[in-house]
Image: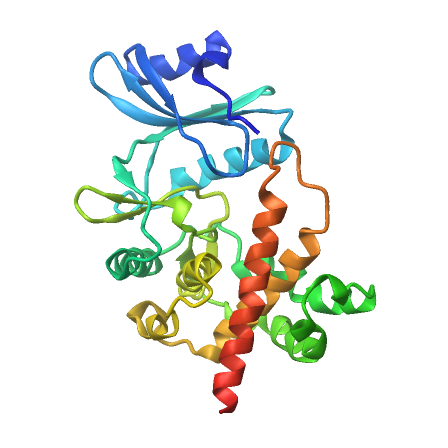
Length: 306
């Protein structure tokens, strides 16, 4: 689905953005990608300022709520984190709008060890920060996914997964059921890190974008999910050696497998449902992530058994 263009925003919404910047907009460049059809534009102002503007209409109810949640989170997180920080945000009954720092950078290359190191270093810095106490616990956010394999088995839906899952459903149920204790902690977790939610800036710093799923957890979860994203791109990617990065200190495979099992089962459940309005690519993404998650579990457990 095509993204909303800056010119398609109501004039009062565009005026509010210009008033916040104290300058008029000269150019807006739509940024494609992602799952929603809302506005995502790099905006250039007459006085030389630039920012990134996200906006969505309330008719896209799920995305509308996510934008409001992201604005609340960006108001709370420390300004020294490697993120793109909030400049302004407003919402009413019709529109949710965020004006965010524009990062002049590129997405990390998934085949670049240097870029991966930069990302893991940024996640380590994130995990070292004290999270706002009002953020939800990641364990609570994953509570539904913890029962995913049991529900799939009970509903006779394991045939929608893989033969390995069918043969190892008891193992998957056991690990997914332990995800709450595996991710327990009081560190800041982004909660949705993939290459398309990260930019490497001109100084060689990985900046983390799109924050609606931030939570409190053990601190290594973002790194594991980023490595999973590398495996989605390349199933043969050597990510095992990267689990020795300091961001994983204090955790082990016995912690990592429960997270992979819970989210893998949760994604297998969700990818069977109709896509939310305006998010047509979401279900295909979830299935690819689910397949990569269980494939990684199979690899880890096979290696442990050797």
